[in-house]
Length: 188
Length: 107
Image (cartoon, rainbow over all chains, first blue to last red):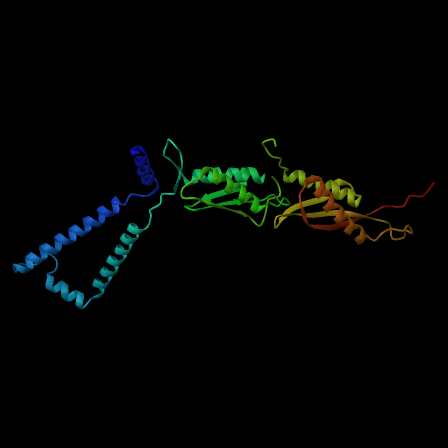
């Protein structure tokens, strides 16, 4: 049981990027900002000269923004959006999990693509060099260049490839589409 | 089903097409030029060949050249599909010259 939960955690770690780097960066920036504001506030309260800008001047600058202040604000807004995206997006690493009773198995999407592509290539009867496959999170695409005069059954090839994917059961599940290029190649 | 696959090289297809065209037009293979190209997934055939013609003064009845070349286009398509298994798209024939067959005097 504990082993199972450990595997689940390891697989999750392998499938998703860690957010720790983003978290550390965000907290350090926030901390430095807070320390700076504190220092300026104390200096201002004691009537000493400010390090960069006194709190009163800063408030005035925000109320009547100069171009420099506006650019700074825009930069901060972009930074904020980046952090929000880092926090909300799944941070996929281009890998899939394969179910296994005893092991935690994680494969790169390229490996999955190669396996799917080979199955489609064998079924299509064209050479390996004429098949290219990509796998994204939930979608795989096999692109085949046909031999001139030998039409390929797109639906049948897609079914064959999909059947192969079903035997693997990758998680998240992958739907395979086959596209046949409009122009073929005369020689083999 | 045995693992593996069969592929036919472009050169082989061209030579085969040349032989078929030569037979259909009844001219020597060496005089026939063939170019194969893909046409939206179909096999496009372009043949440049001479065509046999009787001398103008001949009185022997003969089908018109265009009629015979049209028939040759169909023969090329059908035979090439039968031999190579490829679905043939367009078949273009360019008549390069006429090969006049002098009537031999009957001795």
